[in-house]
Image 1 (cartoon, one colour):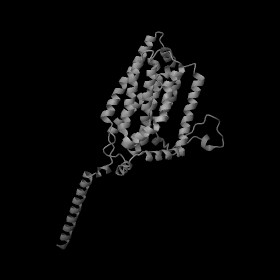
Image 2: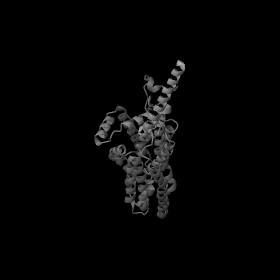
Image 3: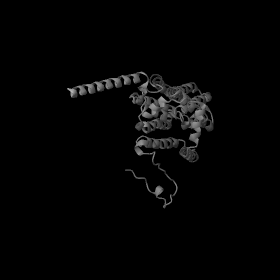
Image 4: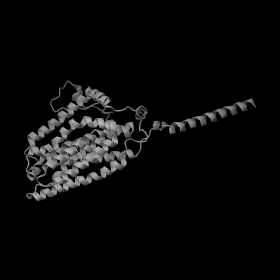
Length: 352
């Protein structure tokens, strides 16, 4: 009898503890503890697709006019240097506005960045609809300036999009897909304008081709604007990782002081400085060889551009950072003679 009473008392205690734990869990979820729920939503892939779509359209417009320089020169009666400015201004606007835009993105969030970048791309494309007549090259420059401004809210978005919406093991893949949109847009910018804008003897026919190009871009960006407005929230309801959950528990207000401190730390990072230097040298060398050796053979610039950005696509799509473990080991390519006694450079890296 005593044993039975002991068992009943233990069972009653267990039942009370279970009910207590259940009620505490419900209170936590009702009182804000839901932030501890880790969940990655399926809609994250649709959000990524919308981003890739409008970043492709934005990067397409970088070389939209400079790839058909001789035709644009003849139609608008301007110099080749003036046409070059339609692409050069992208490189000038970026270093001027990248830090203010980064501060705004950190302070106002992903939705603000997506809306601003997508709508500025659309406004720039629509502005160029008014540049079809031959005396409106200044409107071309205005439209290109607006599109170049949109890119400061576009090109830096993949890492933030990845950590906000995706699982930790998907972050590097998402960054690769985000860069894929930029590379794809640049490659299409080398390919499609020469196919659309032909070197007609009649300038009215050239104007008709430019009209098709401008209207095509303006119409193509409309679905992206609608998608961003309707389907691009600031953040998911639940965080996709424990790191994001902890960050939500202890949110830090973004101020100019904290932003400048993080920027100062970034500029002291040796890896970042080496990467910046390497990227700049690569672009400079490639463009200088194209300009010096092929300036009189403008038609070959199409193949050169496609080769350059197409090669980038082949590296990004199948070989993202996670699968190749690129965080642990870099790969260098030397175009000069390598010293034979250095095994790190003369022997290719092996994979397990």
